[in-house]
Length: 201
Figure 1: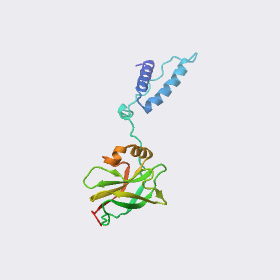
Figure 2: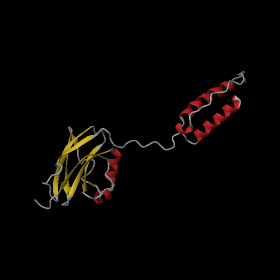
Figure 3: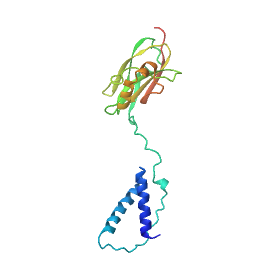
């Protein structure tokens, strides 16, 4: 195949890939080279001699083409950490219908992210928001605290989570889940403790 036919075939291949919306890095570089060659060939008096054949590209197309869309950016802060210091794991002084003060520590919470606490009754796959994510567990000087209602005398898992701004909006707008519980834990879990709420003091 002469250079002219090879050049046209390669240029057509790049145009098809671009038209299909496929991101091919090598194709982009080749397209830029083709544009330079086009301009050179269009100049008055440009030589029409056939240059030596270009080297064949041996990189497989599968190594250059992304066949699936890129993964969405992580919605949570990977460096965020947190603890629950009260109540302690295994606490025995928690009671049904109690306004329970919960607290702990947290670090590396990005601006716009919020801490929240969720209750899960042991053995159930539902997670109940303990309060409004905008103000549920404010972080002050590395310490957070919140007051939640323990509604039933059951084994409980208390979760500390960090919510991204999008997750804060989502949980604030999902009123049905606030009363019926979420099927999965919103946000990223930072810590959890287990205890059993007693029927009465």
